[in-house]
Picture: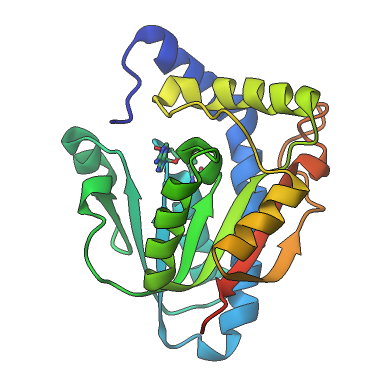
Amino acid sequence: MELGQVNILRRYLSRFKEIISQEYRREVLSEIICEEIFRLKKTKRNEKIRLLDYGSGYNPILIKKIIQKLKKKYRFKKLKAYCYDFYTEDHLKKLNKEKNIVFEKMSKFKDKNRFDFCLIIDVLHHVGLKNEKKIFQLIKKLKTRSKILIIKDHFQYGVISNLLLLTMDIFSNYGDGTKIPDSYFSLKTFDEFLNKNKLYEIKRISDKKYYKWYWPYVNNSKFQFMSITKNMNK
Ligand SMILES: C[S@@+](CC[C@H](N)C(=O)[O-])C[C@H]1O[C@@H](n2cnc3c(N)ncnc32)[C@H](O)[C@@H]1O
């Protein structure tokens, strides 16, 4: 699997969604994530903070915003982010220009680096929530790398919300070549996910709007959540 805007339709769809939905979403997401990192690390601002961004995306502006904010607004001194996705070699040449951020192919996600935070932002539903074994193996791997997992995902409540989220996901991801999901967490299945994967939820943030007013329904905060979790065994 490789990311790629392989034809004109995909390229234009990707550009269109960037313009009408992504800037606001990334602003809200980066604000919340930086606040949480600050809250958990404020006494260690001189130490090196290492972030893992698993599934950083075709256009990985979110992690760039996060690093900028952590430096400028929260005054963290040393930051390094490692970002993994299904990038091609050509794409990696264009992406790897930042001092604090390293982009890598998913196939390189084998080393044993340890991180302070792992970001899994709107990724798990793309991996495929019905494939519990795959999700379990992935979380197991991520837990060995990072003390804290910051998960952002969607909640569905029935058929209508499922279709709505799916439509939004097709619009937001088809252009970039990302696998389209088949289902989303419900309140119940997310609790089961936490238990099965032995994750302790430090905090759940579910009152934020990630899309502007002209995205009726999808901008309703009940369809979006962020969960700050840590390994129960540590
Ligand atoms: C909706 S994008 C999110 C990108 C970025 N995290 C953000 O929030 O802007 C989901 C990303 O997850 C990645 N991903 C990682 N592992 C995946 C898997 N096993 N199946 C499908 N997508 C996966 C996709 O390639 C895609 O770039």
